[in-house]
Image 1 (cartoon, rainbow, N blue to C red):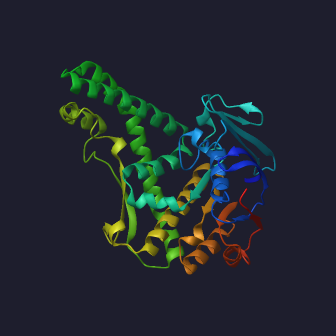
Image 2: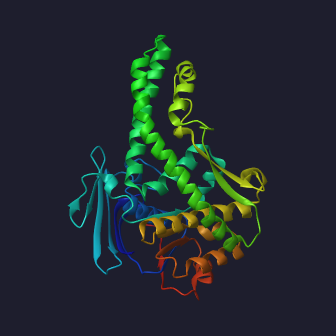
Image 3: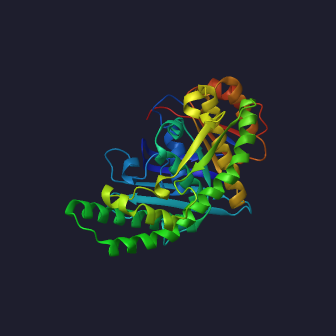
Length: 363
């Protein structure tokens, strides 16, 4: 699978744009602010139905306008083509069409065209709170399992309702345990599915990560991650029961899969405190390449790989190791953005892949 052509209409700073790509490495270069990252984000939007950087569609419409559309032609493994268009107007429902047929549910589109994006903002995985790491888990699993998407949506809806009730109980000094138990019972099944899916994913991701990290960094490190959950020897139903009084006093659901985290470590110590900048950058790229391998295995389809401003963030040797690795036949179509044409050429020319360079200018 690869993306042959992309049309942008009022997507961020691209009022109108028409781009053609090769089934290989597509290198987009130009000055800061020209819209390189926005092209990669539009590809992510086309594949996943949402921007990589925000869940709010109105935030990716060109300033001063109230609608957008992103359209792409994918060539599939059997040489047939899929025509996908996403349209959104502020205040209305977003629509996604595949070969002129509108999806009844937007979630049915997710995972059809798998994608992995690597950006400088991924540093938030290391330094921000657990919400960013849960977002990483959800982005991957939503592309491989429709039941996971449904379970996650249901759990979030029930959690919001349960928290609203707990807050009302706290403010009014009442205890409506019957209604509270009703929400709790409905949350158990989706919570179990989410927990088991995340736990299984991390178990499969770990060896893929270690292999990739060694290829990029060439360092024999005790580096990795583990899934962190508050269950600790109890099941989810027992967890809700144990925390009931604490939830009532706090006016919110204090524990559950909405508090899950990933613990990143180096030599059994927190990665963000003890790793060098080079090690952290290698870690982030490695976990994204491992994500690529996981999606490839699950979907039997090579994801698009979007590398935003990658050479700005890692040293020369790590950059070259990465490019030599992703140019292998194991990977599919790749999009790279950079501010310097000469730096791009240095890293991509001579690789065993089709190459297309795409210059961008302001406006």
